[in-house]
Length: 162
Image 1: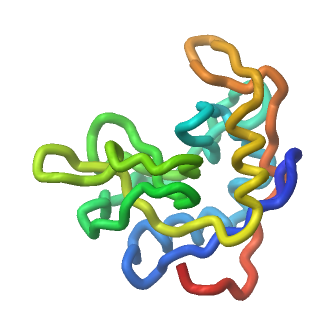
Image 2 (image 1 turned 90 degrees about the horizontal axis):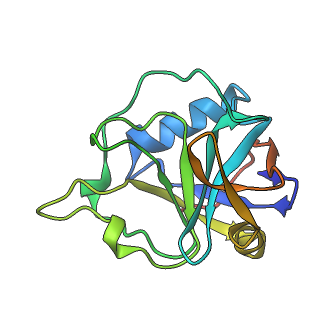
């Protein structure tokens, strides 16, 4: 993943998270993420991207996928997970990278959780730098970077297992 702040290398778990991993790969294969933003950054929490282009214009997505959070992979620092709305099976293209351990986002007996489908294997310093940029609220979008942070491209290479 090449961003305006630097490169982040991800390992995607297609074995334990087949639906979520293949969904992300499908977006990568279609170059969907090229030109999208990290539109939400929260210091000591996470950075979120993959759904909006410059000017916070929503990008049309494929159908939502089944939430695989019950598999039990924890939202630990450096993991990548699917963003979704309140309903459990609403993830499409948006993802986030955890910059701290966030066990409150894991599935449990009383909550659906957020599906972790990989991890950062290089470039966590870039994710950390993105998480501390100055933010504002724009048209109801909270924690939006004042200066846009672009995902220039996401490409697939032979990756290590997650």
